[in-house]
Image (cartoon, rainbow, N blue to C red):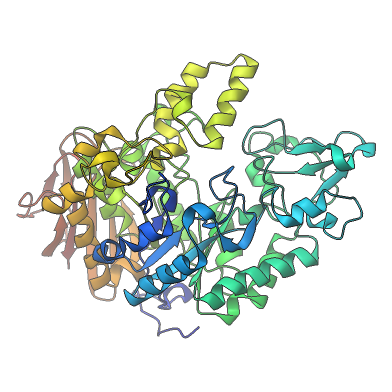
Length: 572
């Protein structure tokens, strides 16, 4: 990969300031099942995306992260892959995919594919062969425990089924699955598995894909003998699963065999990883991944004992600032990070971190101001740019996510409080972010003329793309403006980050500095006005952006920030 020269931040130039396209990227996450349906079967598809390529280009984004479109029975919405080299029927054909890739590239947009490393579908040919006989050549492609050895050591499943081992009568054995029982874990300790997975990566890179988002990559290494989870991890088994003994060996091998041979972008889903471990994966000398994203702020606002429930007592802004600052510090001199608010695994940005009623537009704009002014590669989730919000389903029959459904069934079977769970899911369920994109006021928000695979949020009559296009004060127009601002000033990518007002529970204030350019980002995370005293040596150069147009343009030594106001000031 050809890298540009260092950009100095005023101190010693760091490895992390070497310019590369994937650091400067602005990524848009596409959840294709819910983006646009082209054939009215109620399921978003590749041709639906193709029909909206000009819209994607209009945003100013330059990378698309595409959730899985590989062949799958869709037990877990594509994360249970049955054939890595083919396209799932609901999504279209390989010709459609190649047309999509060409159309994106023609518009200057790269594509990173979502690659599931830890497991396959139980309908994948490898697993079908693996469970056919203990002597089959594919037996060792997965993790098996023969029944004659007794019950396997207890391990928890992410999807709260009856543990992570499932009995298979055909060979009188148990197989391991950290997720659904229809997602058996691959045995990465087997060199043949690694060889196959690297070949799959090369297949897609040779087709023109520009990189990968690596799903659950921290789980691929398993401890020999499958011991029970140690006591200290009983409430945090993600951290245990993420500390397999050969994880870094596999990632370095992956880099040698595949990544280093292409000009690509890699981002890992870093479940169970702390900021203190970040450089073990992304440090330039490690030769593993380029970037990763964490879950620390995704768990902010939830109960520490169960992420299925929100917790108003765990919503201190000072804690949120510490999380983002800690991760920024991790990549201060080496490696690189990612910043996001929503993915397909979290509920809607404005509903969780903003105010999705009285100040929906203002708080959405504030969150985008933060997202696009931080020192990391920003990720925008589809629909957030028009301020889509949580649908807040009332009934379990409305949900489609295995995560929610399985835990509801678990509670129902064990006599738990299912109503309290459903109330909690209105705020944190993953399906909140998976409802169809709201294009217009037409039937089903213009997503489909058929019956949508999941209900459309009924607020689409007022919250939709067409209405946002007509409203020059909409979040959509602001996002485009903020993206253009980030692209125009390298300080937002490579500049130093310094936090101010650390203990404030309403103000998130920080500066970015690169050579002679200095900016101050002021964010009011509250429903009321807040005064901000500017540094004594502050001399305003210009107001770069303001989500309250015409307000506070007279900047003196003190600024009164309006509810959910975001303002960026260039100063000297």
